[in-house]
Each structure stands twice: as structure tokens, then as C-alpha cells.
Figure 1: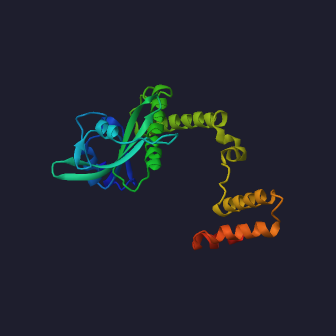
Figure 2: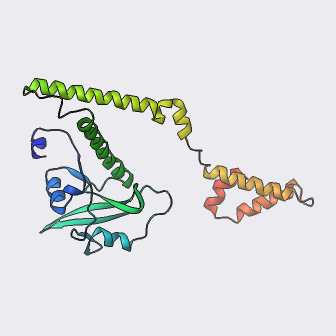
Length: 246
């Protein structure tokens, strides 16, 4: 990373899994000017400062209420990592383990401006890179098909392997990815629009008026008087906004 920084390679976040995640690595990478998004270790040996107490991620997870429903994450808390006299604020984002719904994983980031959804999305790109290298090494023979010692030959071989991988991704996109459906994909993904507050109140007031008119003893003038009386008893700020609904 020091060499990458000296070479002025543009980057903002450094992604890695639990193998490299420790308070020392978070502090050292942040000192280089990069932010970290990583998978934290679920171990009692690594502690985070949370609510004034040094705790491991398991203890932090147990003491907080989890989000229900189909939320993308279970829990998000702010904490800090410490190494000697150094301290760095971090955010811990607890997510479900897709391979075991009863289990959970925890992501850690030093970028406090990221939302929980952005933390999950950014870390997800690391898995795509892992799949890319796995396919290139295991199936496209990145390491075995070229025995040349020439730099140009090795560069050409790597370029050919990467091109073959792109052929595979295009085929996968066209055969399995729903986005290949074009405009139909976006029509399927569009949610029903929410009714605005004014429209919702207008519908309620209209329903109220219809129910009053069902009573034979009330004519239109009496119904209007009932509505005006109803609006006049509301707070002035609300009443002014609802006058047009009546």
C-alpha cells in the first residue's frame, strides 16, 4: 500500500477479510490516508471501545436490540479501536450470514461518512474480485498455461486470460441476469408510488363526507358544516393545510 500511495494510484478504500483485520492494521492503513472496509474477526481476543468499555464483537452484539424484518443489516454501532496511545473511531455493521441464517457476520469501517448500506455494497465488491481470481486461476489456467520468462509474453498471456473471463461474464449476463430484459427489468423493479400526505388526507375527508351523506337527515349544507367544524377544531397549522382537502 505504501508503494501504491507513492505511485499515486487513486484509491479511497482498502478491502480485506478477517485474516488481515486487526486494530494495528486499521490504524496503520488509516495513517497512510486510506479508509478501511473489512470483515472483522468474531473473537474474544480483539476488543473495541464501545460505550466506554472495551468489548469484543460478540459482547456488543448481545447487548443491543437487533433490527427486524428484511433489513440489510441487523445492527450498527459506533466504536473505536485502540493500539497503545492511538485510537480511531470505527463503525461496526452486523449482517446475516447468507450461508447460515442463524449466524451473523460483522463488517468494520473507518469511514464514518458511509451508510450501513454503502458499507455492505463496498465490501461486496471484494467478493466479486475473489471470484474473478478464483476463476482465472482454477479454470482459465492463469498460472499454468504460460511458462515464458519474457515480460511481454506474460503480459500477453494475462490479457488473453482476462479476455476469456470477460466472454464468460457476458454469457452469464445474457443468460441469467435479469437486467438483460432491458426496460422490462426496470418496470418490474419499480415500486408502487407512495400516496402523498395531502392526497391521503383528501381521501379520508372524502370518505368522511360520503359516510355523512348516507344519513338521510343530513343534506349537503349540513355535511359541509360538519366538515368545517371538524377542520376548525384542528391545530391552525394543520387546518390551513387541509382547507383545500375539504
